[in-house]
Each structure stands twice: as structure tokens, then as C-alpha cells.
Image (cartoon, each protein chain N blue to C red):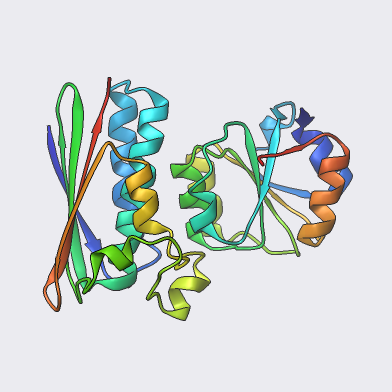
Length: 115
Length: 137
């Protein structure tokens, strides 16, 4: 289990939405820019690590009950994305790491792969 | 209970709004969260298909005490070979659809995986109808 606050700390991430969720713990990570693949995952308590910054990232997470999203490669969430994420009580983070780098660091601090 | 939601072809900023409404309704009805997730993932896949491929469509939702029946109908190019479209990895999506994170040829198989019953009928140059039935029990 990894605390959201530790994800933020280790990746020097910006909290875009869900700043009150820093004490929540996440067990799994799944990294993909392909929402079709994200929609096939039925693991709970998941951090989605993605470089796809459009509204469908948030919609996909909403449908898949994913509450935590980390944008890598300095991708920025738009206002529309923030609004939809906040409505759904999600935590949105942004960081400057590549996907590989972010995954490697998060795995090291205890975030587990789905498969 | 019956609900009807319009789906606009090509409008990716609205894609998912109908499925989102259904999710809110099922939550209010205290349906098992795992069944809600299965249902809305299949609806969302179908909704994205309409946005990606058709001119317009609608989602007709009928919620009973023990099940939900959803018909997603569209006016569009139709599917010439449904068996082929059901194969994982087969896709006719445009580059624009792929940029949105879809078009991997996973949609229809994933609808099947997340529904108790799925029926699909299509006429080329007319449109497609996908029926999804999920039981609450």
C-alpha cells in the first residue's frame, strides 16, 4: 500500500484535484495511454498512470471506479477534465517523469502491478 | 423505469455522458457496485462506438427490479461482418478515435465480457443496435 502523499512526494507531483485525499492508500498501479485496455481492468484501489490527457481519461476512470490518476510526461489536465474529476471525487496528479520512470519509482515504494 | 439519452456522433467531449447518467441512477438504486461497474463499462464502450462510428444514436434504458436492459441504437455505416467485429484487435477506427485512447478493437468483446446477455444487429448504411442485459442478482 502506498499513500497518495508518498506518490506526490517521490515524484514531485502537483495535486490538481483531491488535495484532501493525501492520506488515502493505493494498492495497485496500471500504466496505459490506451483507454480500451484500462476498461478491461477490474482491479479495485488502482492508480491509473497515463500520458493521455483528454476528457475520455476521466470518463474511463469514472466508469471503471478508478479514483486516482497520475499524468506523466508533464501532461496537463484541462479545466473540463478537472471539473469532471472533482465531481467524481477523484484525485488528479501531474508529474514531469516519463511513464517508465514514474512506474519504476512507484513500484519501488510498494505500488503493485495488476498483472 | 425508462430513460432515453441522445448520443451525438463525432462529439468526443460528450462521449460517456449517457453512461454517466445511468451510473448515477444505478447508484441511487443501491445496485451492487460490481454490477454497476460491469454495466457502465459495457454501456460506455457502446456509447464510444456510436460517437466514433455513427452519425447519431440513442441509449434506451429500462430498469426493472431484477435487471437492466439497454438498447443502444445508431444511424450510421453499420457493421458488414459482426463476427469479424467481435474479434479482439479488429478495428476500423479513425486516427482521431485512436488519439482519444480507443480504437484498439476491444470494444465489442469487452461489452460481451461485461454483460450477462448481449445482442447485436446491424444493417450496412443504416445502423447498428446493441442490446445489453445485466441482472442485479
